Every structure is written in C-alpha cells, then in structure tokens.
Image (tube, rainbow, N blue to C red; front, side, top):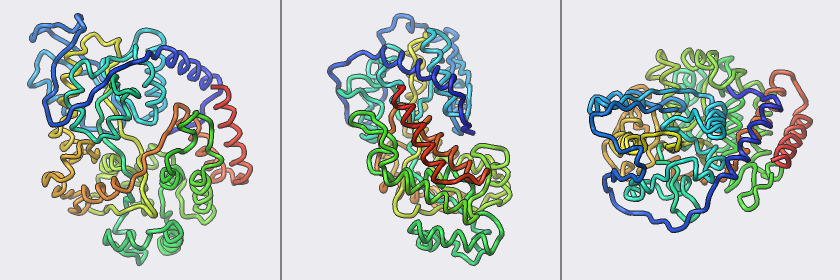
Length: 448
C-alpha cells in the first residue's frame, strides 16, 4: 500500500514535521508507579468538566485491524451519553500525515489518535499539541505496562506521557500446513521452525517449495525484507546519537536487501502489494506458503482469509525476531473532552480488553501480567488449528532487540522497498537500485 511519494508532497510533510518539532517544550520532573491501580479520572482542563448525562462525541482515528470499534460499542452501552466516531485506515503514512496537517493548521485533529511507534519521533517533542496523560491519571497505571514500551511514549525525563501503550509486534512466521504437506515439508510448528531456523535454510526450503508446488514460498518483497531488516542491533536507518543516516553502513539492512533480491531472482517471492486486494485473495486461496509478520498480522489473515481457517500455523523466524509496530493511544489538544477521552482509552487499554484484542485480532498485549495468565497462555485459536498462539508470540517477544527508528524511517524505508519492486517488476539492476535508494535517503536526511 505504500507507494512512492511525489517530492512536493514529501517536502510539504517535512516542513510540517519541522514546525511540529519547533513546538515541543521541555518537561521536568516525572514519576512512574507500580502495581495495578485503576486509572484516576483527574483533569485540569475546564473544558472537560461536563455532567454525566451531557451528550459527548469522541472522534477516534484508528489504524489497521483492531477490535476497537466492537469494544467501543460495549463502552457506549455502559456510557449512553458517549458516542465514538471511528475513522480507520491501513495507510500508516497518510494516517500520520493527516494528523501533522491538522496540528499544523490548528484544527481538524481527532479527540483520540492511534500513534504507531514508527512515527513516534515525529510527535513526541510536540508536547504543547497533546495532553500529558500523566496529568489525567496515566502515571498511576504506568507500572502495568512493559517498561520499555511505556518509555517509548515518554519524554526523556518521564514527566510527559504522550500515549497509553497498546500492542507490541513481535514477528513470527505464519505458514500454510496444507501447502507444506504438498511440498513434502513438515507441518508441525516446532519441526517446521527447525527446517527454516537460519536464513540460508529458509532460502533452501523456499526453493524446494516453489519446485514442488509452483507457487511462491513467501507472499511479497516487503515482508521478507522486513523480517531480516528488523533483526538490526539497536538502529536501522538512523543513528540514535545524532540522527544521521547510517542505513548504508548497517549490515542487516544490506543483508535484508540482498536476501530479498535472492528470493526475487530464484522466483520464490510473490509479486503482490502489501494490503492490496490481490494479496488478500492470495491469503485466502493459498497463493503462497508463508507470511513473515507481527502478532497483529493474525487479524489481517483472519479478515482476508476466512476460507483458510484451520490451515495456518505459527513458528519462529530464522535467527531471531523483530518488532514491527505497536501503537499508542494519544489525545491531541484540539480535542475538547480530554477527561472522557482518557477514561475511554484507559478502559480500552486495560488488561481485560488487551486480552480480548489478542483473542479476536491477535494484538500482542503490552501488559506483562497477561503473559503468565492462563487465559492468555491457554488460549487456543481455532483459526490456527487450535494452536496456543500466545506461546509462539511470547517466544518471539523474548527474542526482540528494540531498535531506534527516527522521524524519517517510513520515507527512507520506502526508497529501499521501491528499489526491490523495480528489481522484481522491471528486472532492474539490484546494485544500481541499492545505490539510488541510498542516495535518496542521504538527500532526504540532509534536507531535513
């Protein structure tokens, strides 16, 4: 779904990013709390002091496949004076650019915005544009969440909290047992995982699968590239120390690129676009063998592939795991009902509802108390053949090395993925495409 952007549009986005960064103010003292305290309903904003029966509409810009609309309906049954209006998209770039535009214009932002971690650096310094959730009660529930996940949404001193953590995205291998059986490959998750536990073995199995079935082993270039790229150690494209572009020096970026090129040249990577109808249809019809994706991708597989229920299983990625995504629920200050908005997101993001989001859409919880909860570990997903999927996600989560993205990650990532598409579709020279992607990334970094 991520297509190349015209330069004028990209420059406009960069200008807006700079204006947002200039708005960020410094914060001082912060504190976190341990335990499982219920969220406090405190607020210093007079505009939010409303009577319990006043009719209030909360606008919510959500991202990707979640069960938040269903949960929202439950919440409004218990709070009949509240209406929640959802606007959902799967286009991450457009989603975040729309908020950038609204914040820069001073109007048009929603009450609740779902902020994806890859875009965190664009907004975290714009503290005057968002409510500090610590002032609304978040500091009292900070201890409920993974410490590293909570800190991703915190100012350096911890005093400002931009959002409540929702899911995390440890990456795994989703695979079709019916197709593996046809290819003469193991179907048991542990055995299949051993067969592909290095990237070299993965490529060898991929060739065998293509020869036996005539179908691509992996669905598309983007997810194969992500699977290797996200095993980077600490940084991907940009230095955490000074923000400089280091993608051409990161060995995992080059390894990801070369490995994907290998799959293209050997014919075991499919030619579909992520989020496209063709990709969804192939997910349903068995058009490929494996999909490398995060825990939340299970929701997309279920949505796109209803006829494939029972045929999927989950195992571990070769050589490690990455973390793709994971979001935060934020409250832009243009919203006029911060108290009610915070009460809703605190309810939506509770232990009980994170469990429901996992069961229905595969959103991996950011509340570690669930990881040993029998309701989580013992959950067997019929769509995945009765497999205890939480166990596999838990294994992957323990293999993750958190990485720094930087505010230009998404645009930079597009350059390399467009290069791979050119290799796939236009038979372009891989080395020349790599050099061109690096040059575009360096130019973007210099202009920012």
